[in-house]
Length: 481
Ligand code: BG6
Image 1 (tube, protein in one colour):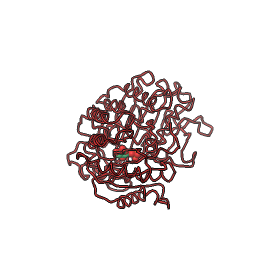
Image 2 (cartoon, protein in one colour; image 1 turned 135 degrees about the vertical axis):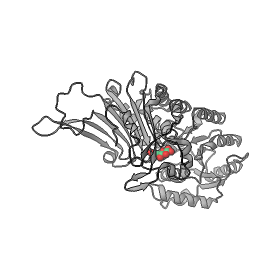
Image 3 (cartoon, protein in one colour; image 1 turned 180 degrees about the vertical axis):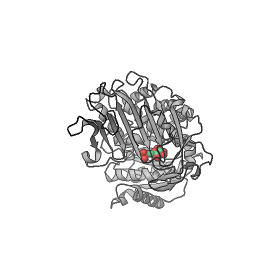
Image 4 (cartoon, rainbow, N blue to C red; image 1 turned 60 degrees about the horizontal axis):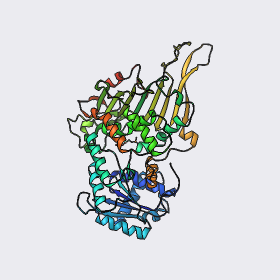
C-alpha cells in the first residue's frame, strides 16, 4: 500500500548515470522527492557509468539536468542534496567491475548513514541488464537489495524468459522491480479507483453494456535521436507490449481481492491469459513519411538519423483483439499507437451499446454517437461521460453532451510525475505498480506474433495513420482525432 512515510536509509545506485533517462527523468524525480521530504533522512545517490567524471562534475551534470527538466526549481537546499551525490566510473562487462562501487558504498554507509540499504537502478541499454545483475551478485551486493529494471524487458518472449532466469539467479522476485512508467501515472491508478471505488460503473462494465473499447497512445513527436534503438524496437516493442498491455489489463481485469501487489498482479495475469491470438487481418502497421506537424515540415522515418533508408520498422500500429472470458466475450478492443500523429494524447474510450429503441429524432445531431466514457490519461487529465441531451427549443431534438471531471479543476493541481511515485514505492519495497515476471511473459505471448514483419503502410506525418487503419473500426470511426 502506498505510504508517505520516509523510506529506510539507503544508497541509490544509478547505472547509466550519464545517460538520457537519468537526465530527463531520474534526477528530477529524486530531487523533487527530496524537496517534498520523501527521500530517506540518510541517503546517497551513487552514479555509475562508463564516462570518466569526478563527484563534482557529476553533481554539476545532475544540477543541469534538474534545471532543464524538473518541475521543482533548485532551492537553497540543493547543497544538502549535492553533498549526497557520488560518482564511480566503470564498465558493465568486466570481471570485478563493481569493486570500486562496492568500496564507495561502504564509504557512504559510514559518511552518510546509508546503513547497508541498496537500490540498484538500471537506466542502461537492455543488453546490459543480465551483466549488471551478474556482477552485483559476484560483488556480494545483492543480499537485501532491490533492483529496478527499465523497459524494454526482453525483445521477444524467449529473451524475456531468459532475462527473468538470469535475474532470478541473483535476486528473489520480490527484489526485482520492472518499471513501466505508465503505472506511475495518477490517471492510470485512477482507473482502479474509478472502477472499484464507485458502485455505479462496475455493474455495467461488461459485454452486456459495453460494445467496444478503444485505447489510443498517440504522439506528435517522431523518434528524434533514438533511431538506433527504435529501428530494433518499433511501436510493438516500444509501446504495445508494455504500456498498452498494462492499460488494458487494469481497465479490464476482475476486481482484486485486496489492493496488495500480488492480488492486483494475479488479476492482471488472468486477464492477459484470456486474450485470444490476434488475427493478422486485424492488424495495420504503418510508418510515417514526411509531412507537417503544427505548421512545421518534418522528416519521414526513413530519413531520420541512424535509420535504415529501406527500414520496415513500424512507427504506427492499430489492431483489434478480443478477451475470451465471461465479462468481455465478443467485445472488440481496438488499440492504436503511433509517432508523428497530429497530437500527443493517451485516452481510453469505453463505448456503450445504443439504446435498444430510438424514440427521438436524432437527425439534428452532428454525428450520432453512442454513450461513452473517455478516460484522458494525458494531457488534460480527467474523465468525460458523453450522453444525449435534449436541445433547447420546441422540437424534440437530441445532441451529445459531456459530463466532465478534470484533475486540474477538481483538485487544483496537475498529477505528479510518474517516476517520483515509482521510485518512492521501490524505496519502500512496494511492488504494486511494477510488473511481475509472469505478466511480462504473458504479454509477450500476445504481442510476439506482431513482430513478424510485413512492409508497413505509409502515412504522412501529421495524419492519424494509414487509411487502412480506419477500416478496422466498425461501425464508424476512431474516437480520438
Ligand atoms: C516510452 C517510449 O516508454 O514512452 C517512448 O520508449 C515514448 O517512445 C514514451 O515516447 C511515452 O511516454 P509518455 O509518458 O510521454 O506517454
